[in-house]
Amino acid sequence: MKGPDASHTGLERSNPDTGDQHCGTLYVVSTPIGNLEDITLRALDVLKRVAVIAAENVGHTRGLCEHYGLKKRLTSYHQHNQRRKTPELVSTLKSGKDVALVTDAGTPGISDPGALLTQQAVREGIKLVPIPGASAAIAALSVSGLPAERFVFLGFLPSKQGRRKTALTELIYEQRTMVFFEAPHRLIAMLSDTMEILGDRQLVMVREMTKVFEEIRRGPVSEILSDLTPERIRGEFTLVLAGKEKEKVAPLDHQVMRRMESLLAADTMSVKEIAVAISHEKKLAYRRVYKACLARKKALGI
Figure 1 (cartoon, rainbow, N blue to C red):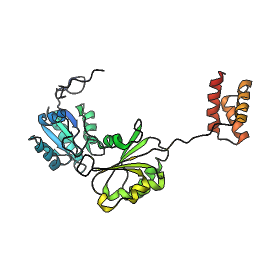
Figure 2 (cartoon, one colour; figure 1 turned 180 degrees about the vertical axis):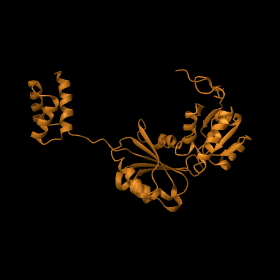
Figure 3 (spheres, helix red, strand yellow; figure 1 turned 60 degrees about the vertical axis):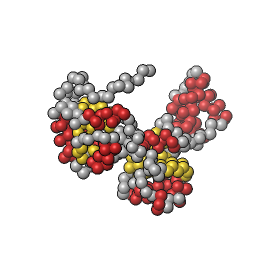
Figure 4 (tube, rainbow, N blue to C red; figure 1 turned 135 degrees about the vertical axis):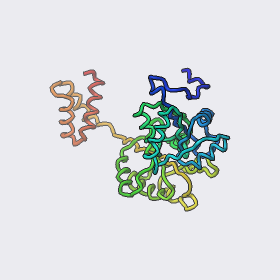
């Protein structure tokens, strides 16, 4: 399938079908999660052209801009001023000026305040354009060695232990690979609670990704916990945790299967009624018998 034109920067004005044609465009721009070279040419082009860059940390983003020779107007946009600044930025966009939204690292709106601005832009009919790039969650998952066909991103768990344990309890039966962010000062408490509630699962801990002291550790939660010395609890952490393994259910024995086939052949009871009868007779879980009964009925063509 043909991809998008490589020369397209996404800096065209909105058209009537995608929002107010007199409004500017809000560009959601991914920036490096560590190594400054991990930024796309398109992202640099957008940052160069927009009227203003809304940054989670102005000083941090100014360093990125200076590295690439960009002299831009920066304005702060973070969790402490987002409710006050969102109307200001929306006003800028509605005046016809383009705005770039960036976070300290990675893709805006993922475990940071950027989501509030994008939501308001959608409500106001302002065109949004994603400028994809680095993502700590995806980068960690890609090197984890754990199943990545299906996964769930959970960001930061609650900081208070009670709420954190409740959140973990809700994940006991989650079979998908799980990706978390965690702060250094909460890392041991979070992993201890994980060990207690979810058990000693396989864990991949990625620290200071793409930076000079990048570290990737793999092993059971207990092993990684035991090796967490103070000098290793520094920097940014992304955790990739194995999901719950599917329980292996032994097939029903021949006697049960013959009884099931006999009742199916008689055609006097529904599948549900057969499952109830056999589960009571043989002291087996109803759902297990019901699923086996459905499968056997299909196989026999009844």
